[in-house]
Amino acid sequence: MSSIQEDDDLVFRKICSLIEPLNDKGAKLTRDTDLIADLEIDSVAVLDVVMDIEDNYDISIPVNTISEMKTIGELVDAIHAIKKEQS
Amino acid sequence: MSLFDKFQNTATLYNSLLEETGRDPFGVSMDEMKGPTRAMVKGKEIVLAGTNNYLGLTYDDAAIAAAKEALEQSGTGTTGSRFANGTYAGHRQLEEDLAAFLGYKHCMVFSTGYQANLGAIAALAQPPHDVILIDADCHACIYDGCQLSGAETIRFRHNDPTSLDKRLSRLGDDVKGKLVCFEGMYSMFGDVAPVKELVEVAHKHGAYALLDEAHSFGVFGDHGRGVCERDGVLDDVDFYTGTFSKSLASIGGFVASNHPELEFLRFSSRPYMFTASPSPANIAAASAALARLKADDSMRTALWDNAKRVHAAFTQLGFDLAAPMSPVIAVKLSGREEAFMAWNFLMEHGVYVNLAIPPGTPNATSILRLSVSAAHTNEDLDAIINAYTALSELLSEKAAHA
Ligand SMILES: Cc1ncc(COP(=O)(O)O)c(C=O)c1O
Image 1 (spheres, each protein chain N blue to C red):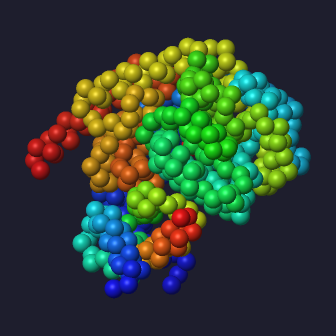
Image 2 (cartoon, chains in turn green, yellow):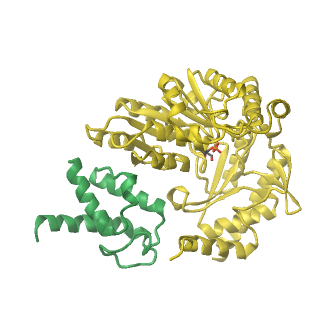
Image 3 (cartoon, each protein chain N blue to C red):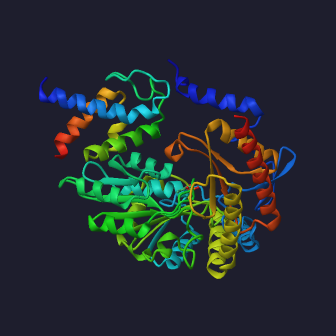
């Protein structure tokens, strides 16, 4: 496994662990899981999950871009992009 | 796919709550007002305990007389914006009076507090080089101001100066202007911001501090100038925003500042330029209420006495309260259904409070928001406390059966 993939996997698992407490329906979490449509997490709760992610990775994710991220995979990709940019 | 599909989930929830009781918590009609703290609802007199009438001035004799005079003198409406034909002597005078009261050099009056925040934020911060930092629990109008601005917006943890500090430290060198937005007392839980620390952190990073004292103007500080007066940092706030719709018992909003550049907003702030100015009667009522607030501390004393009494009673009843004692006393409930049931129960017992359920509440909490007023009489407070006592009994019974 390449290091990028490994890192990808770590970020993915971290996000899943932050989302799990809100996963009331016990849905299986994949890269394609849509936070609002599949998990029925409300928009404010999504912002709060993102806040946890920000503090975990010491990055800032602007509110403007959060509304564009629908799936867990998109969130993972955005974190990689921002980590690169802000490091 | 229709335009209306997106409302389906909310509509289903709403209708199911409605069906249970036949009451709509978000569509209550005060059929006839009976004074600052009472109204007739569906033929029954209700104690109003979910308003923003902190100083109880909605029926103030002086404010009513001033509004009547302005109405007769200057007419029912201005039919134009502040930028065009909608600035009358009264609008200017109120700007001067507010600036003088707060000790700022400049003040702009907007048509509502919502528009004041929208107008200030959208005009001050602009993409691509400005960044806005907002407290996570900020009011919708601050969020909307960020959207209208289009500038990059970053949330920091509620009432957490360290969280703000971290986010300001992370900003890149290409960022030009930084605007930090937060509130004095928060409307839903009644919790109060560490205003001094937040202002200090903002300034340490060369950012400007915008403080919305919508719920704390007239309520906090020795003179009622807000939480920033109480914390001794009134002069350090860059932009002070407020509303006439709460302590001043009218409609309208304002932004005050010591920065002379505030005046530029008069021709760059769209929510100032493209909406009609407050009516002469609204302005006159707000001016008279401000004069009352300045002249008479006893309303603020009564407000806090009432808050203490209700807070102590609720604490004794064992309710889970969202914040330390303040004029907003929010009881946390286990979820939407329980909150709705409790809200309805209080209505049946003659008390109106605000039901707040997610989304739109911090941490997805369901609460009953009660706000006290200086105008609440001991009788009003007895009725409120009795209704909550009955509610607490009902909730304990339910818990015992569960
Ligand atoms: C924090 C805050 N700011 C601004 C406003 C808007 O005030 P207005 O009613 O004047 O639009 C409110 C009230 O809803 C508020 O709670």
